[in-house]
Every structure is written in C-alpha cells, then in structure tokens.
Length: 310
Image 1 (cartoon, rainbow, N blue to C red):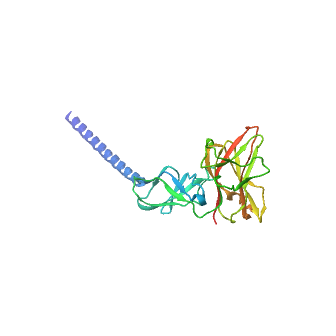
Image 2 (cartoon, rainbow, N blue to C red):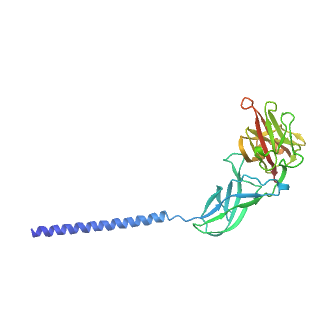
Image 3 (cartoon, rainbow, N blue to C red):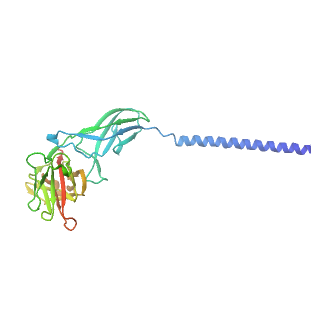
C-alpha cells in the first residue's frame, strides 16, 4: 500500500511538471505571437486635423461682378503634397505634425454633374502656415479667395443700364427684366423668360460676339432658377462668319431655388475642329415650351459671366 501511494505521488508530480512545462511553452508562444503581430501591425499614427468650414469669394463688383459662388470642395495640400478633395464643412485628417504650409484650392462642380469636380482655375488658392498637433483640430472658419489670371469677356447682372444680351427674332419671347421681390430675387434685378401658349420659346444671346484666344481655358458662370428645363450653349465665329447655329453644352433641370453653375465652354473643341479654330463667340440660353406638359413656364437668370485666360 505504501509502495502504491509513493508511485501515485510520483505520477501526480510528473503530470504537474508536464502541465507546467506545457503552460510555459504556450505562454512563450503567445508572447512571441503577440510581439510579432505588433511588429507586423504597429499602432496607427494619430493624425492632426484641419477643420474647413467654407471658402468665400471676394470680388471687385465693377470689373468682376457678383461674389456669389458655388464652391463646394476643398482641394487640400500640405507642403505641395496632395492630401485629398473634401466636401465642406469637413475635418481633414493629416498625418503630419509641426509647422507646415497648408494650401487649399477651391473646388466646384462642373456642368452641374456631381461626379465632375475640378479645382476652379480662375480662383486663387488659400495658403496658411499651421502648427499641426496630433489629435488636435485647427479650424479655418472662412478661407477667402479671389479671381486671378482671367479675363471677363461678358458680365451681365441685369442691374446696369444697357443689356449685353438680346433675344433671337426666330423665337417668340423677349428678355424680361424682373425687379419684383415676390419672385425671390437673388441680388437686385434679374432676367427672365416667361413662356406660355402665345410665347412658347426663347433664345437669349449676346448682342456682340466676344474674342477668346485659341487654346484658352473658358468657362461660363450663371445663376438660375425656374420650373422648366433650358439649354446653355455656344455659337462660334471665324472671320466674322458663324460656323454653327449654336451647340448646346448642357441642359439645366428645373429648380425652385437659385442655383449656381459652372459651364465648361471648352467641351466643344474636341467635338468640332472648327470650334477649336474659332476666335469669336456668343453664349446663349434657349428653350421651347412643350404645351402638352405644362401651360406656362418661368425661368430666371442672374450674374452671367464668361471668363477665359490668355
């Protein structure tokens, strides 16, 4: 009996030593695995943050027109390195610390297409030196920019004497100047097309063609609202002769509130080589009311600008 008790104690002791060794081996393996994971997946760095509320535009009203804009995006750079494009307001994560130069380029939606976003070439950039601190938010309440490196070929706000636009005699409606605040004016007076069975169509264009250099960057800006779609287009001239009757660029959908759109006038260059060689132009807005859809329509315009470089 004593011999059996001793053997049993020896067996239990051996089993405990084996389990202890296994425990130590498992613990060692776990520690090695955990260390390896930390080496493979180190702790993520803590970013600094830049809060951008909005970008505002400052203009000279006499030579550049209204400051109204539709700057929706901030193109952010740190020391000329691209961080990304962000819709405002936004907290931009930046994996930098210390003093750095922040550049913010104003971004807009082109031709009313949300998927087509550009940093607008005729706005300046906002530049500021910021001391970035990981985990800290630096706020830019309002980054102010101006127009730069551009020529205004057309400015029409409907507030000055002498319109720069006229209507085509082949379409029925003429330009209406609206001053009644009941329609919800944007800034002072606005232009309008008021369509019905008696006047179901309009074509508003420039009185005089204007020059834009071959190869120049060209955009049209316009504020509008209305309850019927209309087209914006471009008519091109070579040696004083029209080479087309007008090419629609974009058709704008109805909107009950004022909208701002940036229209790419260069888009026709790739479609028609003759347009690419033209040196004089007229922009236009036009629509024809479908009386089977609705009996009348009202479309309002303001702050029409044509801008180019060169």
